[in-house]
Amino acid sequence: MNLDLVEIAKDANPPVCKIMDFGKYRYKQQMVKKQSKKKQHTVKLKEVRFRPRIGEHDLEMKINHAIKFLEKGNKLKLTVMFRGRELAHKEIGLDLLNNVIERLTEVGNIDKAPLSEGRFINAFLSPK
Image (tube, rainbow, N blue to C red; front, side, top):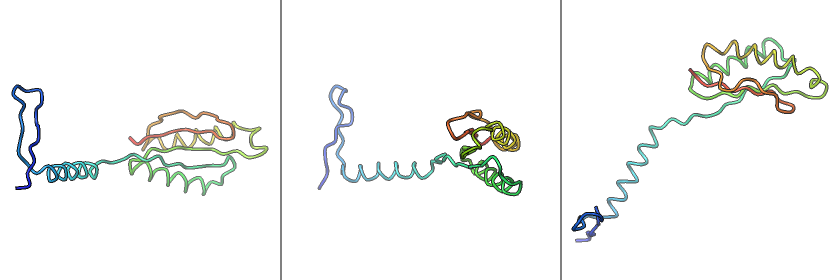
């Protein structure tokens, strides 16, 4: 009959067994696992990069992209990049990042405040 004897509860006295098609049982378990993975929503980390001397229109466009990322439920990493002599004036980049965070507080929460790491200043936001 192509059936298998499968032990269900080995600790019981006497042990409990069941006659079933083990290959079919494993297949059904895989399908249940696959269906549960389909319903999961993985949170992705999106990054928006700025430069200290960014133009106003470019800044508006990047902020709009950041709002879309947060509305879709993604986490957001804001980065200000410095090159060359810009490193001497990190306060300009910090002011820029604080301004962007202030604009994004309507759609997101601050996970990690701005922190300087070498040539970058990073901040992390999560959706509300």
